[in-house]
Length: 312
Image 1 (cartoon, rainbow, N blue to C red):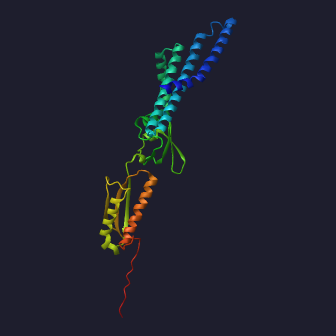
Image 2 (cartoon, rainbow, N blue to C red):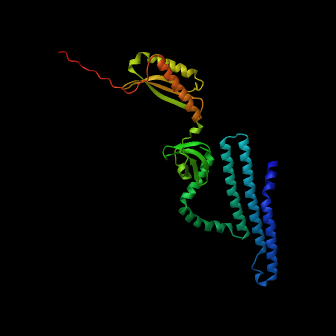
């Protein structure tokens, strides 16, 4: 609770200054109204006071909400929380902002004695016109809300979409659009309505990374293929980077135009892209060594020409 009291004290500084200056301005206005008869009955000081203090109170609520949000975000970073926690904190903060703004609007309407039923009725017609003119804005707003609710991805995730043709690391999820950073280091701004209609692939949440390769061996080394396959499989089963709880296959799968194809299919324990590349490199180099140790060679496209000699 101490952090609530600390943020409460920090948030009161500017609103208190607002209230002090406001009280002075209202006092001066009250003196003017009392001094000039033309102003009497035309200036409602009571409503002005209510409006002023309402604005100050809800301004204070926004400041306090922002400070509490920053506190929880820093706390999540210190304890090394998942990015999902930060996204949830930001989503709750924005929902709190909407609630405070809507509540302040209704309080102001009540100060000016505006019937809420009449306001809603008149707003229905205006709302229809606005909604027709701002369909994209509304769909993007609700798209952002759906992203925060379902949390298929959060800030920092690497995402890609095969049907909408975008790929990059999420930098910010706004109410209107989401900003990602492509691998060319360029920012890409995508409307949330596009994302809600996209097929999203999130490689950052994979459990393993896959190594899937086909190695060609010469037909001249056909008699050694079975031994090569067995040794490659033994190497993978003893490799510290390979997850033996996942599928591991090494098989002869095809007789190609110039080589027999050995398929290597396995999964690494790591999901880190850079580390996976290093581990895949180590696996491929060991496969190459196994092939050469058996006196065989990795195949490359070749043509064999048979010359026919005529006997005289």
